[in-house]
Structure formats: structure tokens, C-alpha cells
Length: 425
Image (spheres, rainbow, N blue to C red):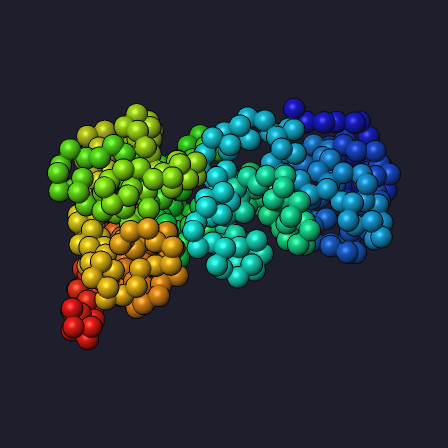
């Protein structure tokens, strides 16, 4: 549903000094409200006005007041402006917001705040959104969090939807392009953009854009696989950390995964669930039942089968599962090396640690070089090994992932020998 109050588009265009085409069909707020906003902001923030004027919102009669309220009318009452949230977007886009709330993007802010080391970081990187918060802002925030952000003058990123549908054009066409994902899904721990763009999927998309090959040729983008048919609900079978429950039937893999879960603080040394399991569940970063995992795997198989034979798609996904199994073996060996250093008193346990396991969720808060290497092995190289496999990028899976993990394990083992020799243990 779109709110409309009928006003002649041509008359509105003349009164605002815009072209008729810029606001063709604009039938939203009273003309005086629209005129007042645009007249001022054409000077204060002219490109915002241009973005809005070229948007579907302008064509459908949605103006500044619909999203920002009517209380701010002069330079002296800027504090009264209302910043839109996903709920404001839901006034007209209820289906999309409902889907968004079911997906992992909606939990991005909560997931960041749940990380044990988040409060160690400079405020500019988190609430200031110059680091982790710059991408995790897509997540839903509580009213209390929004109030605190406004108090700190950290109001960028309230709306969530504008992470993909850039203000003030809010273009659906833009959000359908893979570049819309590149801002966040790139770099250190999740280089999906680099993986996809240099995979056969990404290369084919680029070639098709250049007019090489038929326009109807299959060229899967991020949205094709992760947001099929325009849904706003996104989730993967393995989740961000590539751990899951229940445990696998293979004893060695079950043992290795248990070691990783202990290092994530989800299991205690005896293999029993900890309070942190509820945090992982709440942040939706892992599938914790076979049924939940099967749902996501079935969705992906259905998408893959649009281009590939079902048996081929199933086989390729199972190979990527196997890559996780092998990466877990290296990861568990490295965790044991560092855990034994804690247990034998060669290096002190992390502050607040209840047992002799490194806390992988503290990420870069490493007290020693060997712990830092372990964290990088988990967060950077293990990620690339399995993500590269699922994104059909052999170079990332092998050279930037598996090969680096092997080098990490060797370096950690050698460093532990030197540290033990120095400590006489």
C-alpha cells in the first residue's frame, strides 16, 4: 500500500523548481510541506534531493515528511527530525519487512554486540559505524539502542533497509545488483565479493554485462542464490561460523567440532552446553537442529538446480561440506596446541577464562603472537577454505584457505616448541 494525497504533479513540479519528470506522479504530502523541505534541502543537501526526485518514492508521492515526520521545519529544530526505522518502511513494504525480520541480516547488530570483545573496541568502530558497525548497522536495533545512538549523535544506520537500498533513492534495481553486497561481504573474514566476482558465476555476469554471450545466459549473482525471487529473508545452512548441531556421525569430525565449539565457548570442557549457546542461537549464526539445516540446504539445492543437474549440485555442496570437515581437523589440532600451553602454564589463560581453551570469539584481542595466529587461522583462513568451496572459487579454497591453514598450524606448533623450551616445560 502506498499513501497518496492527490496533487497535480505538474503544479508541484513548478512550485518546487523541479522538472515534471523528476516528480512525475508525485501525489504524497501537502504541497506546502514538500515545497518547504525541498526548497531548503536543495541548498543544504542538494544531492539528497536529486536522489529522492529520481526515486520511485517521488513518483508514488512519498515525500520527506512520510519518513522523517513533520516536526522539523527550520534550521533551529533539526533535533525534532525523525529518522526512519525498518518499521517506517514496513508501513508500505510490509511483506519485505516481514521477510527481512526472519533473515540473518535483521540480527546483524545484535550479533556484533554479542561478541565478547565488542566493548573493547573504539566506539568509533562499533556505535560510530566506522568499523564493524558500518556493516552490522543493517541489523534491527531496540528503541533504547536508537535513543542512545541519537544521544551520542551516532544516528547513521538507523533504518536497516538503507544498507542495500541506498538513501534517498532507495532503488530496488540497485539492491538487485551484486555490487550492493560488496560493501560488507568482502575483505578479511568474509571475502564473498572477491570469491564470487572471480568465480565462473561472477565472470559470466561481467561478460554478459559487456554484451558477450546471449542476454538470457545463466549468470548467478549474490541475489540469485541468497535472495531468490526477491525475498528479503537470507540464511545459509552452515551459517557464518560453519559449525552446527547435531554432531556428525563420523567420530573424528565430531571430536574436532567439539573442540572448536569449546574454543567458541559454546561447550564447556566436558562437552556440555554453556550460556553462550543461547547467544549463538539468538544471533542465528548457526543451525542448531538437523531440520533447520535441511531447510536451508534444500533451498540452496533448489536454486542450484535451476542451472545444474540436481545430482551435480548435491555433489558439489557435499564436497564443500567435506572441506569444512578437513579444515576442522587442522583447526582442532591448532586449538589443542594453544590450550595445552594454557594448561601447562606456559602462557596465561585469557582474562576471565573459566577453562584452558582460547576464546575464538574475542577475535583480535590476543595477548600473545601464537594466540593471534590461532585467531587468524580461524577467522580468516578457515573462512576462506570453506567459503571459497561454496562459492566455486578454487583459488580461494586452496591457496588463501587450506594452504594458509596448513602454514598456520606449522607456525603454531613450532612457536609452541620454542615457548616450551624457553619456559622449561
